[in-house]
Image (tube, rainbow, N blue to C red):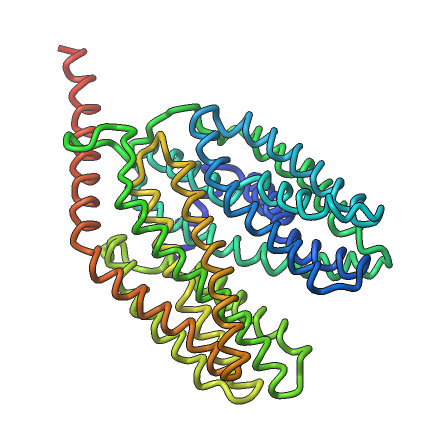
Length: 425
């Protein structure tokens, strides 16, 4: 009941259409990688070329995310959101015409541009939640908002590839990316213009500075820790996807790989929504530590897979343990990052996930060639163990930072209470 009430509060704050809009605005990013591969393979017949184009898209996204976040902090989400949406839509369309027109030299640059200009809807909507909840003095609801966003991310990355597959049935492989371009304009632009957009350089109360940490100063060490933590979950996802593919080939059912990995997303989305049921007394740092412990168990379950049924069970366990870890990382960032750098920090975390996915997929691929799917499944476990060690090392510092933020919030609230009293006197 408490969780349902919390989610109803989120709807009341933004209005229901905003949640729908934010979901639709995410879909083009989820359609991009598979859409690029589908288009290039259909036009060239080369998986190698398609892989290079998808890699260019991913590298562009990893590099462009922090740039977009920094520009949003400086110039506002509205202007930057409109600009990136228009450029991204144009890049998708240009990529389609470059591939179909035989302009091979332009394929990689346009794929990289499409990734670079991708509207950072997920990270920037998390910034909006930090502002909206902070302004209302509802800091404790931030993990609930992050839980919802984690579930929506998972849902979009299930729906996006599925939409590409459906659109590809039209017979022209360029249709998915053209639809992604249109959807970017129709959803990402209204998202940028929505009333929830925070004013430029506005400092929400959730991140009130402490006397020892002036407003706007970037705590680089703390941000680096959070990016490293998010890279861990990226490695887990990337290596698991490669391991599942190798597993499906081993059992002679290559077509089941997509189904098995999709179950991970379903389990993760369900667990993400359930995070709102965790007691408020379990603070953000404790959630991070315990989710790191659970992630070790979830990745270890992969090594038990020996049939389709056991593989499905293993990825469900992994999804259930991965969601709280991902959510706790974003929640900590929302609680501790400087308000004037929130966009940059959130997009850096997202880039950490993207980079981790690429690293995990590459490492798991090498081990799958040498040792089979069990070698690939060892990569997520090693990453999770390293993530737990990182959590253990940084916990004291994170607890001090949260206490300082809580003290600053209390001082700001007391000041707000005193001001009307002094005015009345």
